[in-house]
Length: 317
Image (cartoon, rainbow, N blue to C red; front, side):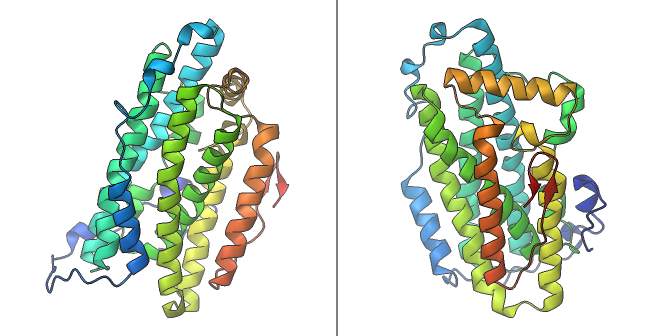
């Protein structure tokens, strides 16, 4: 199934035939390291595991330092962050099924066992931060904002035999997670609360490995791809950019202009000014633009050519 720019994110990754309908054929089973750089990412991840309950110094968080408005805004921000991290927990098992059915190298399967744990830790840490600031918020306060943060359809795509795995990895990891990593890197610079900064740093460290996985994978297989396969990868990345990232999935100020998104943007501003972990459009915009340009340049070296992207607040990138 070719992904169309005219589809919604959910429609673009709609399941036509799931891989679970195919007969299972797992043998011969090999643990050879065909992608040694990814195998090393697995070992690095096992060495650098952390526990949100014990490794984050929660005693340094003093909610009384902040106003009611600041605490409420930060609850909204960290709850929203938890939603996106929680969504990633279901992606990894779905992709594990895909790796197994397609007999992909064991390096990929081993690494994604750790990725699942890391995404769970990210969700737990963000949820705990919201709780300690006054309480986790389990859905957008205004229903209209759900369209920006609900899903990017990767779980469905992973089980869709007609959506190429290469396109999923390029869209999810080399695009969405690359953007997320740069956001966390920026947040590390602008966040002042010691506990918020710890969480940002822990997540950023994990995200760096997630991004490396995607690029190592694409670099390893790019010479084997046909022009048609590269075009499908391009379509997948375009869909992720236009229907997900430029729709406000990671950054509320990119969401369509309406009262719901304006309320989220204002909450982000209050959180940012309090040093509790968010950022604002004028600070993040150059970061986002530079990330998209870097992704395009890296894709081009692999023979994958992305078009310009447009957004009312960004112009044409």
